[in-house]
Image (tube, rainbow, N blue to C red; front, side, top):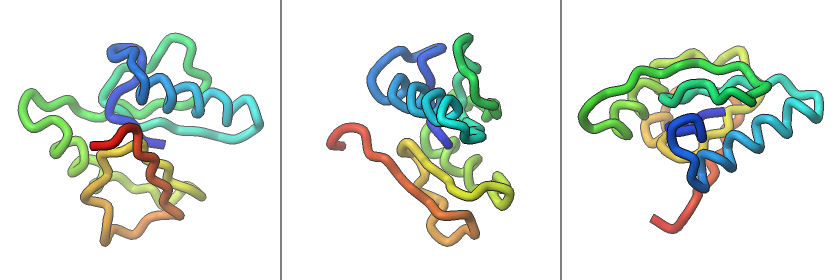
Length: 102
């Protein structure tokens, strides 16, 4: 899974939903790894990969950093937004969840 933010530093709707879903999937027996710029939440039961934080153009650079990741070891890639540069990249089955209307 990917989420640019998690509740550890942004306790709002989309980060909380991504975090909650990841924890629920682990509770259901799945292995989950979350890629995020946010630190690992203290109650996370999933694996966490810390992505670099950029002081400017954060979302665009985050999306570029995602493109540089090797997702070949995963069955599914579930992105919570901000995956705009994954279009032509080889990747597993790809799900994107839109949180909001923008």
